[in-house]
Image 1 (cartoon, rainbow, N blue to C red):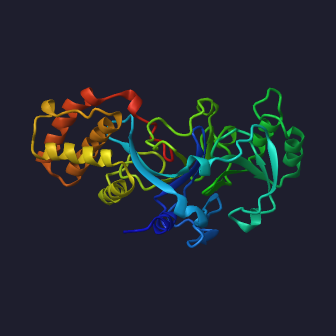
Image 2 (cartoon, rainbow, N blue to C red; image 1 turned 30 degrees about the horizontal axis):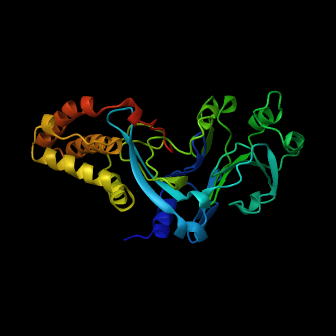
Image 3 (tube, helix red, strand yellow; image 1 turned 45 degrees about the vertical axis):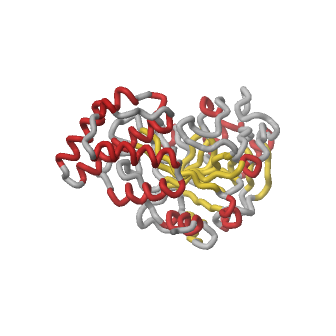
Amino acid sequence: MTQLPQLLAEHLRDWRSGWSMGTFGAIAEFHHDEGEESQVDDAAGLARATSRGGIRINADRVAEIVPIAYETLSPRAHRWTQAVALCLPEDAARRTARTVLTELGPDTEAVRPQDRDGVLFDMGLSLPQCDFCIRTADPALLETLRQAEGRSLFEPGNPAMPAILAAHPHRVAITNIGRVEVYQKIGGPDTGGVSPPGPHTHLLPKLLATGRTHSANTPIPEGLLPLGSLHPGNPVIGAMGEDRPFDAALHEAFQQMLVRFGSTEVVAEKTRVLEAVSRADEPTTYGLPRTRIGRVAMRLALRQQAHVAAHTADAAAHTEIKRWIAAIEPAGANGADTDDDAPGH
C-alpha cells in the first residue's frame, strides 16, 4: 500500500490534482497544466513550482500529518467534490494568529530561489492555522506597507489594501505542514473580475467572520485542524469547474483513498446502499441513516453509481439506480448538506 509521502509526491506530479492551504475564507490554491514547465521539481523535498505558483509540503512533518479523505455533495445533482484534508492535532497546527499587518523579513524559505530576497508581510487576518502573507520587493509597495504596519488591513482609510490590490504581490499561505505560493494577479478589475486559471487566492471577509477553520460539510474529527488539502482529479468536474465525461479510473482511485483515509461510517453506508440497489430492494423500505454523515454518504453513493452504470452501458442497472434516486433524494435531501463545487474548495 502506498505510503503518504509517496502518495503526496505522485499527486504533485499529476497535473489533474490540485492543492490548497489556508482556512475557511482565506485560501491559496496551486494547480498546474498538463505539460506546463516546472521551475522547481523536487520530488524528495515535496516541492513544485511553475511560473504561476508553487507548493512545498514540509517533508520533515509528513509523519505527523493525519490525512482525512472525504466527499461532499454538489448543489448540482450529478456532481460531487472530493479531497484529502491534511491535518495536524490542534496544538501542533496553531500559529501566531497575528491581527495586524506585520513585516516578517526576507522570505528565506520561498519555494523558488529567486524569490528569497522578497519581503514577507503577514496580512494580520488572525487565522489559527495559517499565516496568510504577501511577498514583495517593490520599493513603492514596501514603503506603503511599512507605513501601515501595526494596523488592520480592513481599517477604514488604510492605504495598504488598495496598494496591494493594485500591485499584485505574491501571496503566500504558510502553515505548519508547508506553504502554497501564488505569483499570478489577484482576481479583480485587472483580471476581468474573476480569478485567473491556475494558482490563485481567495480572501472572503464574510467567511472569515464566521471564525470557522473549515466548512461544516468537511468531516474533520474533533481535535484536528485542516491545514491544507489535496484535491485529486475529479471524475465529473474539470479543472475550470466545467462538467466533464465520467472518468471511471479517477473515481476508483479516490474510492480506494476513501477506504484508506476516510470515515468507516461513510464507507459502510455506501456499501450498504449499493448492496440494496444490487438486490433490487424497494427503496421505500430502506432504513435511512440516522446521522447526517450517513445520509450524505447514501446520496453520494447513488449519484456515483448512476455515472458508473451509464459508463458501463448497463441499462438495467441505470434504470434501477434512477428509481432509487427518485425515491431517496426527497427524503434524504438537505440543502445544508451541499457545498459549492468550485475546484479547490
